Image (cartoon, rainbow over all chains, first blue to last red; front, side):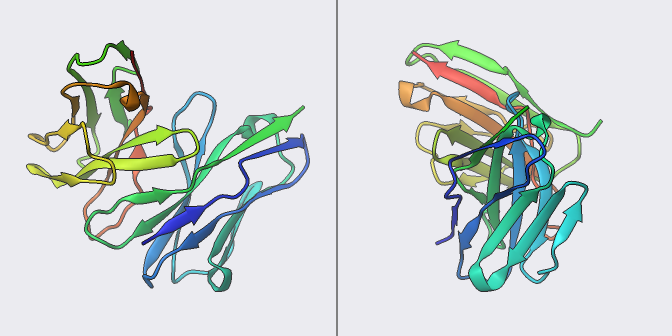
Length: 115
Length: 114
């Protein structure tokens, strides 16, 4: 069975600090996809990134970067120079290449960026 | 604009009163799905649909029904709502199976069952 663990329930930082959100996953499959979604206070889910299991290259998009390490089954998300607008709940999710095509979500990490 | 829409966005109802939450997508996606979000549990899949007239249970289907008569619509039906179905509900869609595309989510529906 697959599982996603986000051990950090809540993180609070001051603006301009860097912050890393941890994500650890479990799966027996060799083909899978990992996602990060952002849920701002307004409630919608915003897609941030998708990574497949064969691509371990780290990715950077502006202030966001992702570190995928298969050896430790982790897919961590770093926000550099955080801003108040980054305050949200962030979900890591695992997608299996099976018939059901369901995303398995972690429980989420609430990030509060203080001005 | 490509989007997934849900209605209503907020709903307060009473135990046992049947309700339907609609979901519609304008991207011609084959795959659609319903999730519920509860504190500390993340999102869990309720039902999904691979295509028109093809639906199946997810992780937490009890108390829910769905139908997929048209490609664009995937309503979630609560025949006899109970307080434990108070939750935030999301509809999602993505392209066909082979593409394994990213799932795009609707804005969410907050349901309170008294």
